Length: 155
Image 1 (cartoon, rainbow, N blue to C red):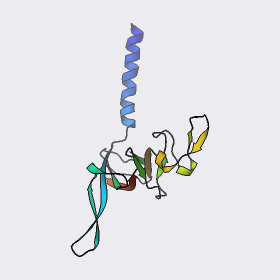
Image 2: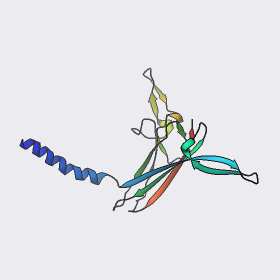
Image 3: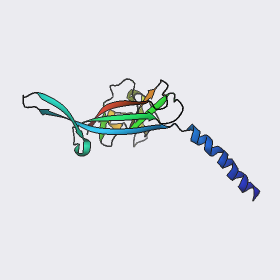
Image 4: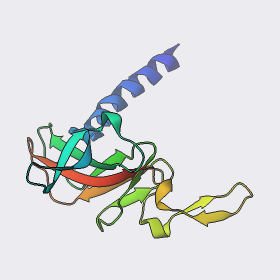
């Protein structure tokens, strides 16, 4: 009986430490479809619309907003975003890292490999990307916010 009480006490000691280890960063993702229309003068205009009805070949613009809602600065924030299912991200940003396994491993696409059904491996391709992330190296003060964005094409 005493050992059960001791385990509960140990669990309650560890809980606040785990809560302190969490970063108080709020992430919010917005997704738009970029469309081109012609204005009254015949000039092409790009407009952003809600991504409710994105179809094959549409260009998506994903905006990831972040904010430090804590009372302490945060260092080396990794902003991670899941790529929408059926979308292929534009990987031209050199600061962007990618994952092809749900966020377990990260790197440049050229360095990532996936297992094949026959027990071998193959080089990952852009269609395999499941998550993207950026590291914000600067210290983020309480209340500070920022924005990252990337493009993706609906397959």
